[in-house]
Amino acid sequence: MTALTLRLEDELFAIEAGSVREILDLVPITEVPNASPFVSGLINVRGRVVPLADLRVTFGMDRPEPDQDTRIVVMEIDIDGEPTVAGILADKVHDVTDIEAASIEEAPKVGMRWPPEFIRGIGKRNGGFIIIPDLGRIFETQGARTATPAASEERSAS
Image (tube, rainbow, N blue to C red; front, side, top):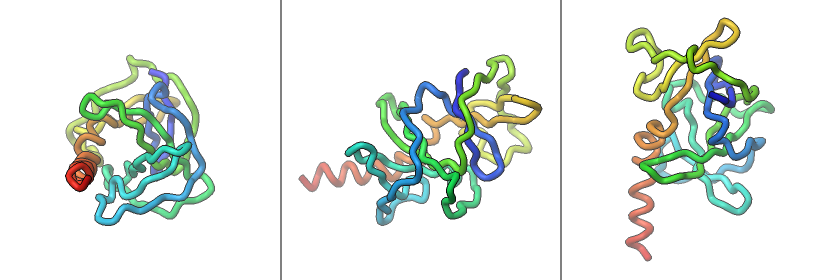
């Protein structure tokens, strides 16, 4: 698996490099009233409105103020069979690397600090662990709760 590695708090995460469209410095974020903390804002990416998600909410992490290392990873993910462009906040983006498929193990059901249903696997690199989140599942369960009602209200209002 070719993956982009990024840091959230003090943990290393990997997302499939093929789904990444671009990496942005922090841009202005439009807060959405009454939105869930997971997708609480929208960003403008080349004239397109893109939801911005914070995986730290899903994984119960602190949400420090952005700093000079904070980046937005814009990617295309499959949500309920639909290709969707979304951004995620990263405390720091590291590099693109290959993670050997043989080194990826299923997340243990015990002793994990993260919900195991949101983890596709745990890879190993240089003696450390890399968490591989299941972004499709995270967005379907965390993001859909807020996106669906707003979209249906918008349709009925027009």
